[in-house]
Amino acid sequence: MENLELTCFQIISNVGMAKSSYIEAIKEAKNGNFDLAQEKIKEGDDFFVQGHTAHADMITKEANGESVTTTLLLVHSEDQLMGAEMAKVMALELIDSYKRIVALEARQK
Image (cartoon, rainbow, N blue to C red):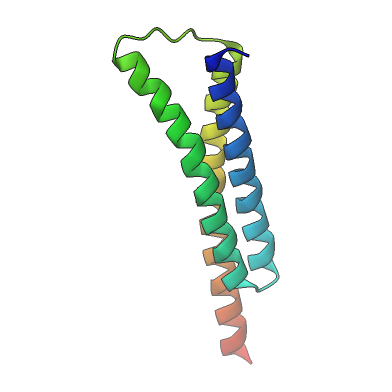
């Protein structure tokens, strides 16, 4: 497998795991498990950094004059990277919302 393809699959694999972790964080927060939700966010961040680093390395190579051919696989990997980033944003917002709901319910009792 060509180096570009390997890098694309590294990105896809890592950010896919990140996105899964962020979704798990939402589910844990929905169940009131906020500490576990935070652990899942951290887990997702660790995966995301690996995918982002592979992507940044590719950009650095191109900036240094090494040609990078745009392929559908590369576009897909970048799409997955952006999707994972948005999943984290949404997860953090939902976790915050669940915390507010729990706090409101506690005050009403």
